[in-house]
Image 1 (cartoon, rainbow, N blue to C red):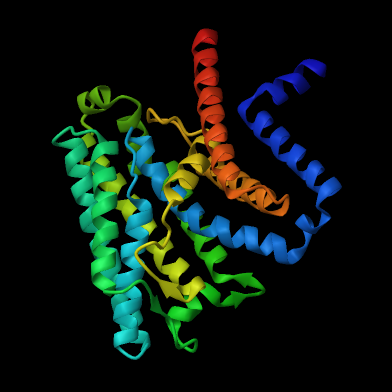
Image 2 (spheres, rainbow, N blue to C red):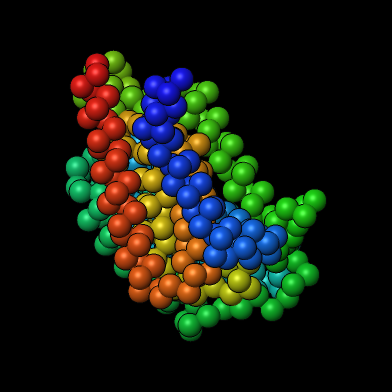
Length: 324
């Protein structure tokens, strides 16, 4: 029994749950307000945004890539969608068209990223980092000012980020639906299985007839679309959009991904792990705020957590290979 217990604690999931439980105990002692409904709701709101992004990022990381432009993609999508809607009197039709335009732009960006990675073999981090600056600039030029506001709260755009269904906020529902679809695609479809194969070993996957280039492009498209959806939801929640919308979310999303046990070299990771990573990151950020820790230190904590998570993942993978 002891062997099984310590084996569970020593596993990746055991370590995550133990860390999570330790946070709960600390907050129960020093900040009981952590468990209030209003605070838990704020955590869920935060998780919903970068949780969607993290699910999208999962596809890219599974094929051995990375996308640093998700924050800027979210900003551009938010600016496009909200300005188009506001210029058309907030009609439901304009909201739908605005969303479709934003998603179309995201698809184009995803295709570009995928082609640079799969065909031209350029480093994904360099390409997407460059795209990040370009997309932020495009968002700034598009709105022509610092902010565009959602001034009418009786329309479909407002409902996207503020409507509640059985007391559950719409952003949380969108996140749950997106995560469920992601889980189904990755575990129950041929596309998902081939995506894992393409990321695990591109050469071997190519030899068995898998078009690794196509799957890489598709992964970047899904990631960009996820970022666009997040940006639209975030702008609805905040009643505003700007070129700095979702700025800095890249680090939070990557932390959720690596804490969730996704192998940054590709081919290994799960939606359940990403969801847990997003939850842990959301709780950690909330704890930092409640304990009154400076935002400067919060970024330091995030960096330490990312390095520790990657080290644990590498250690676990090395240990597994030794056993095999």
